[in-house]
Image (cartoon, rainbow, N blue to C red; front, side, top):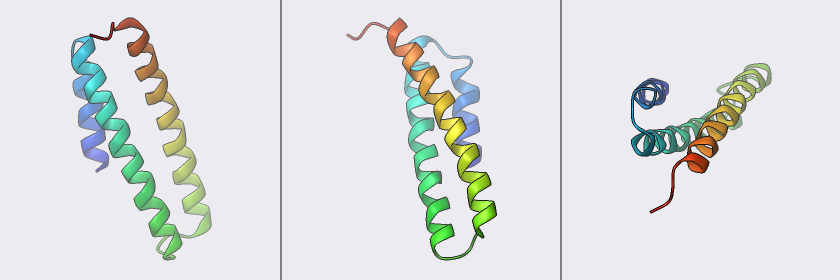
Length: 80
């Protein structure tokens, strides 16, 4: 799943504004799914607390960056 997110972000860096917005939105959706799977892993004790905290903080920061990128594009891209 991480590779899919990275691929979407790499593609978005080369796309036009409207395609870029679609790729970033899909990357955010996949990131949310990854956060969910991380939480499930923690709840079934497949991850200890320390690893969960470190990973969830990093995913949260990535989510903030993607959200900012998306908001920036939405203000520049007119809605049709």
